[in-house]
Every structure is written in structure tokens, then in C-alpha cells.
Image (cartoon, rainbow, N blue to C red; front, top):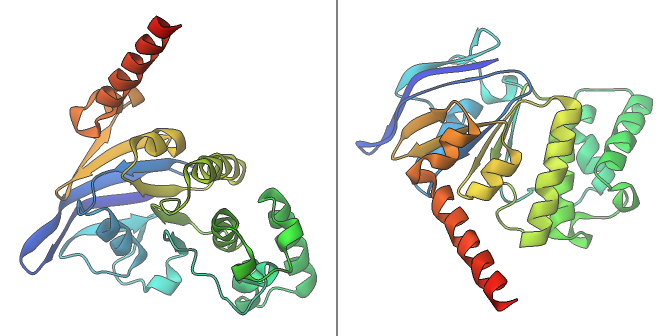
Length: 245
């Protein structure tokens, strides 16, 4: 579905992306792990059309994205901040994309109501964003993205500002809805556990260079992901716990 070839980008003469190439198939979630400043956000912005690459090509379902403006790429970019319309209710925030496409009211009501049910937001439908919790606001943002059936969902550490339990809940929600709607996504994160939770395929982006992994085992075993050391830590904790018991 998505093919990126030899993508490069510099800012002020400093390389940010170095010959990045990847292939993403329909319904896959590519989890891209990396440290802050490694180029993850720049990659997403180039895909979304918010930044222009210095070199390389982007094709979505065979279409060259180079000349396509951001509003015609049929992608949605989700940030850490939900960026909801404060003057609109939850229902109207989710319905916004359908309204600007002039979808009939009866269809808007049916689609939005069904999606709010999926996202466990029906009881919040007539509330304003300021009346919601952080997790609820992020679910509204997610719903607003899904309602227009984007060809590609770009997620820039979308759950990074949530507490641990809400973040875990949102990861499971994302998994369930992604599978149900066969959503194709590129999900960037600096959290290895989150990458393993949400991804169906895995990559690591470091100093602008992307490494794709053929299997979960290869991803876990790569020292740069630090997953192996984290597993060793929890094994040592379990051993100490068993000794105390």
C-alpha cells in the first residue's frame, strides 16, 4: 500500500533522515521505535505532506505523493494533543469530517453513533472537550480520524501524555479498532513495550537511519531497542520476589 524509497531530509545542513525505505501493506501497523530527535516526527510529516523531502519517493497505492497536497492525501496525522474543536460537542467533533464532505444528516447520525459506541463514548456525546478526561479526549480524536476512513493513519506518540493505565487502555482500544476496520497505520513511539503492543511489524529509527525487522524476535534481540535488557530486569525482579516468598 505504502512504498517509501531512499527518503532523505536535512535541516540546516544536518541530516535528519538518511535514505529511509519501507513498505507497508494494507491493514498493517508499522511500529517505529526510536529516541527523541531520531527523525520519527519528520518522517510522519513528510508522509503527511507537511514537510518536503530533499530526496526520495513516496507512493501510496501506486500514486506518487510528491505533487499531492496534504489535504488530498487521505491521511490523518494524530499528535499527543487531541486538538479538538473546543466549541463543538463530542458528537460534532467526530462528525466534522463528514459534514465538510456534505454527507447526509441521517448517514452522519448513523455513522457517528456507531463509532461512539465502539469507542465507549456514547454517554459523552453531548459534552464539550473540557468536560472529558485525557483518555476520553484522545478517543474523540481517534474517532474523528476514523470516521473519514483514511487510507493511512499516522500516529506521533499519541498516548504519550496519558497516565500508565489510561495509556494501556488506549493501546488495547487502538488494537481492537484497527483490527476491526483493517486500518493501515504508521505508529511512532519511544516506548518499546508500546511498540510491541500495537505493532504487527517493527522498525527502529536512529539518527535518521531506519532498520526494519523480519520478525518480533529480531526486533527484541536488537540491542538498540533495549528490550532484552528490560526483560532481564524484570526476570531479576521476579527472582528476588520468589526468594522473598
